[in-house]
Length: 220
Ligand code: BMP
Image 1: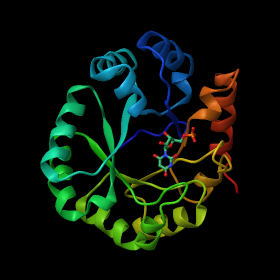
Image 2: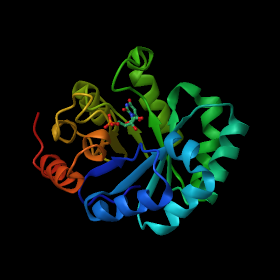
Image 3: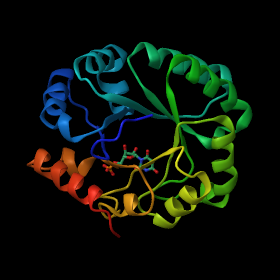
């Protein structure tokens, strides 16, 4: 589980080197509860750069690679991510029960949280047609939580009503994609995920403070 202080997760989609990344994260570390990294880091600084990042910054690191392969590949990836200092991983619910169950079990053993993608901030119509099935799949498997879109507050409300308070809801799509800051939390999300609105700002710290204020005075 991600410990909630401010309710803000940074989507750290940057092609910066490790040094610049560390300097940026240090500047806003007290405002964010987790750092979401993924393809940008894998393709730019590589696994060794990610390891350097996770060992330099005392934060929860969420790997957003939207993993969804067959079981033995998923298991290999999870083990490697664990070696890199990753705390949680986002997986595609669409991979289905057979490909997910052993990897969720392995993740429990390794102390890695699995967050299941069950709806998308744009498109993702096949997900929305199968929402209830995927939520039930996640609760049966024992995932830590779900990714739910800030651009679709009705989905967040529906998922929260199905799962109660035992699972964490992480919501991307806030800011640039149109989700109103504070609306996902007003609809039942625990965390709002924000990337470009903070990263591309001239004053990223001030921008992050504004998001934290909105998240903690939630309204749509
Ligand atoms: P931004 O705030 O810059 O729009 O970034 C959103 C982040 O959330 C990106 O890292 C993206 O991969 C992720 N995301 C998303 O936008 N929509 C989804 O449905 C699922 C995501 O993980």
